[in-house]
Image (cartoon, rainbow, N blue to C red; front, side):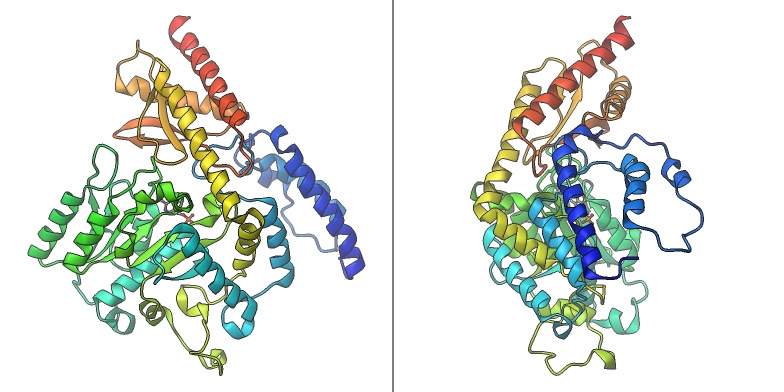
Length: 480
Ligand SMILES: Cc1ncc(COP(=O)(O)O)c(C=O)c1O
């Protein structure tokens, strides 16, 4: 067992080297782990060790047992899902965070964590052109932020009765979101007590964005049937295709019917650092709450979710609870962030954001994000020029949705199967990692170009592999 600082120093130096080696060699690993289910578990002893083990022995097992089961999210050829970006600055800060082991539940338990969080949240309002009257707090995930939004909307809607009395029976509070909304909305609706059946899925237009007219019709219909419209969740950058719901129109409808508007910009929110991308957020000032995840695209390792509200009093009233042991003399004069979300205990997340923002500089973040957008445009142009591939959704940010559509295959089912097979082959090659989505029933490949250390050559190489693999697949299936 490490017992003193000198031993720790020795191991920490080794660890720093191991981490630096990892980043240096990351390109040599298969992007997606190639292990089979249960393979890692079978290599782990069933009993915990009774006696202390040396760090070097643990590290040997880390290399032998754990590393093969790692999917390399920081690999520049990782293009799946949305990224969970890290960066050198973020890793260094996270190391410090672990060492300090702060529990930032109230100001008194960590004044620096609290006040740095306040400042960083203010900085990000300026960086992303967010309404300056908003107030921000860090949550762990967008899922938790959206849950906070729905709970606050619920309390506002029921005059804080639900907090004290429980859900009024037959309350019929309705939540609205597009059919393309992220699953975390449905999860929040479920666990916040609204009942899944009260989530109204609003149709989308040809660009997979929420149809504002259909939203208004749904609200009017619900009102006429005795339901209470409570909250609309609009998305800037849906998970499937990064579609952007019409924020201003949605906001105006929400104002008209006194409905809470929550905006989920979990991934695409980072793009608002570019003034030329802010048109996607036109009308943001009409929102009651907003979330974006620096842990997706802003080079800050998981977890860090930025949650903003226009009225912090409503948020605090929803969550606050005051047991004797948490009473302090500073209460009311400072931010006690335990009252701003579900958890009492809070990590010192602001430190890594502070490191990242300072080490990149706002210009550095802007430049990197711009490059990511250019790479996505480059790829969409190649797909546009190709006779064998089809672009399946507008490329609003750094995600390209496309599929293999050789002209001799017409049946929708065959195209879906072909693209599933293509994805499986690409990912099992270990050379790159893409994911998929269904758009209007069509199975599409999703390729994101937003890794922290991605370069144009990675995208060009990925496109080359996609062309080669699809040709081989087509030849084997139909020409041989
Ligand atoms: C649009 C959107 N919202 C919410 C989430 C959930 O994010 P988190 O994992 O931070 O809860 C995602 C995840 O990809 C997302 O794409």
